Image 1 (cartoon, rainbow, N blue to C red):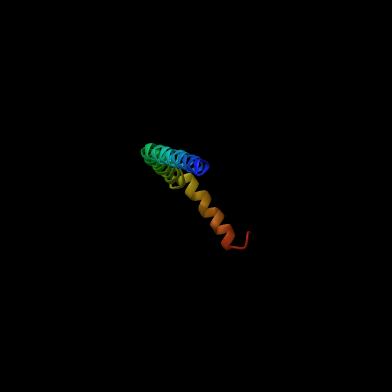
Image 2: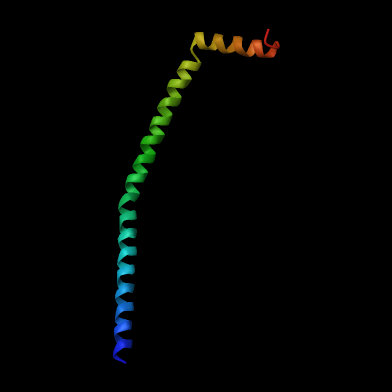
Length: 79
């Protein structure tokens, strides 16, 4: 009977360790949740800024003329 009690104590101790480890990971994930949101915000701002710069470049007169020439050549069979 004594060995059975010891075995149950060991199992109980292992369960406690597993539960503590899981709780630590859950708490760590919750701490990082705000940081992930801020990283997404910075990424979106950077993407919008890049899109604005790209739009300005593409709509400039010289680039528009070049793009029209490329499309014109493609429609005319590359001549």
